[in-house]
Image (cartoon, rainbow, N blue to C red; front, side):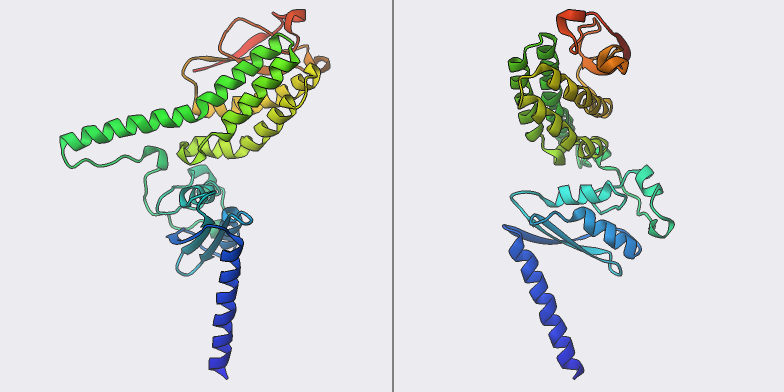
Length: 288
């Protein structure tokens, strides 16, 4: 009787696994170690890693091993583990930010194994020649990471310049370019701290950029530009830009509530009023 029950449970587990894999196309399954303590950890790890029809995470509390099943054409192991690290759980590849780990519930604060944060990982050279090669590779990686967001910032500045002219058609086209730049970002190549902010703001940026690109009404475009600028500011603060960027403020917009924008120039050219009040505003912060 006992053996029959065990056999039935095995069949159920196999069927559930098969069902999960069937829902996920191009399924790849891997086992990785993710550190945690309890049932609360399990819930958070699995909820964070799961994406409907794209990724499924099953974490075992006793072994601290997670089975990742994902659509290899839409995501990868690194993206899944980064998301999980960003909510406080280390893996052997990615270290959770200290402040996030420290904010975990007491019972969830597992013993951390000493690891190097993602953004500080470097290859160890076996000889001087190999070391030079690795240093060149590290430099290329840093440049690649910076370039991931450079086009986002560049197209934001184009959008801002279009609003200065009060040209709704030009602004809509610039916003479409911004959307394309956002969609081209490979978030798995971002530094950990940048990646954490990117995950928070990317959908908000897309929403505002879509609204701006879908209309030629400059007032409506400017309303969404206010919130777009806040999210771009949050992003550029952590990722930086190749030159100084000026965070500027117009005290008149939105019935005196005011609104901010970013510029590569310290001179004020107000995107909220254009030629009506071109020099209205001031620089409130310089980001270097």
